Image 1: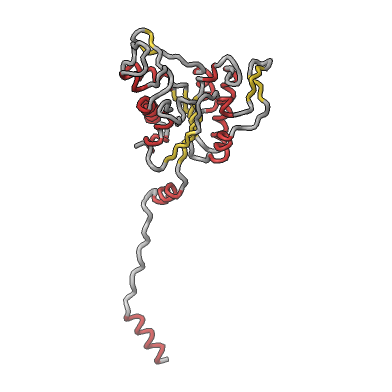
Image 2: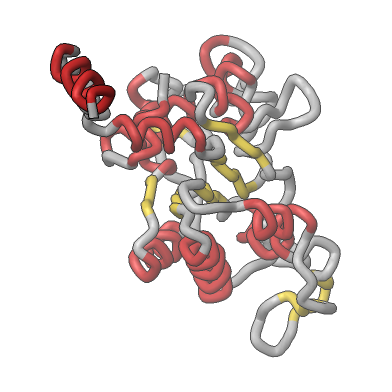
Length: 273
């Protein structure tokens, strides 16, 4: 009993230490940690030579100049390749030279190209898929020929596939070549209506790169020119043709696309430098 009283007296003599206050996490802290833990955002590019990385000093597509515009949280995977229509890009090697009764190139089978299969296997929620065709598709002969209805159908399919995986599709009208009417650069690409319709049908973002590029050509006064694409400002923008870009021209087009991300409040713009 005497021992119990002694222990009780000792306990009462020792002041109780206040409990350590709970430290609340700063607002949004958990979200920031989760964002850093998440995989980087991938921007997938599907298109033709005006977007492709290229293998020589000219041509260089604008997609080759796109990645440096973003911070390290974004990776650009450029799967564009020269000479492709939307159909030959999707079904590489399986589009025949025969035009069917519907006016479209006959497919030998519907196996997807390795490029599209790479997208299907790798695209994830939070990624972006940029799609720009409409230059080679206007060919009168197969395998590159694509009719307007088929073009819209395939672009709609690609956009919906990206959305089904939680990614954001961005459809672009074809970048313009340099065609002058006197001192004014003018539009020269097709499939604009079909690209717009596919965007409207799927809720995809739309960048009218044809209009942006023509307006830019006029702003920097690329017209008139005498058809010499090897000198002056036109020579800085284009290879020795009216279509393909030098690295400088590709960089200017990439900046137009980046500018559209900002002006249209497309969330990817938050990663731009």
